[in-house]
Length: 240
Figure 1 (cartoon, helix red, strand yellow):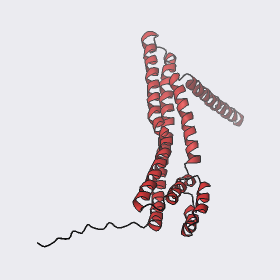
Figure 2: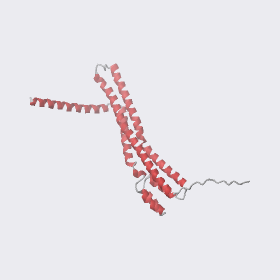
Figure 3: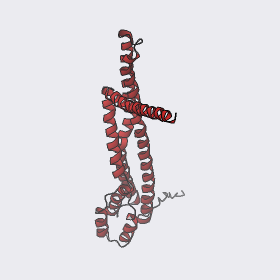
Figure 4: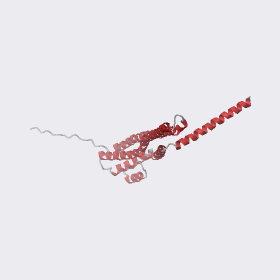
């Protein structure tokens, strides 16, 4: 009796393993039969990985406001050693370095001029970074639509089988159309969801860098360029 139970258990495990393997093979086959929409979704997924990897490498704090740069620039500015300051800034490829270089170049200009120029540099470079990860928003929008298109095509094929091939009497004939519909929907969502999440991640990182950069630049402007208060126009009234 014990030997019989073991044989039944082994047979059950073998059947489960075979069924699992068959399901895996069917999934691969369904992806292959997904049609042109799966190929577009695959291309979008490759673009998603490429953009995400590039932004994770290049859109970091050292590219915007590297740590310790202000601490190195302050004593050089105080000593009026602008040549050494320029050499230091040339070695730093960052937004803050270019803003400080602009301040040093136009150190004889008034506060309003330097402040406006520094703000333009920061705004332009941050928008440049934002433009590079904007592709993630496009992927998050297009991928579900491509999946929906594949779903519609798959359902059309399924109804075509029902209408002309006696599909209701033979459910196996419906497998191709239905699997294409479901696989395209799942593939589109699988690409769109992480793309949307990474887009918001980089957008939040950009806002964090923007606030930190603005804080440091304003501190340097108030320290190095004392704003001149605007004197009210005094009018002398002569008594007649």
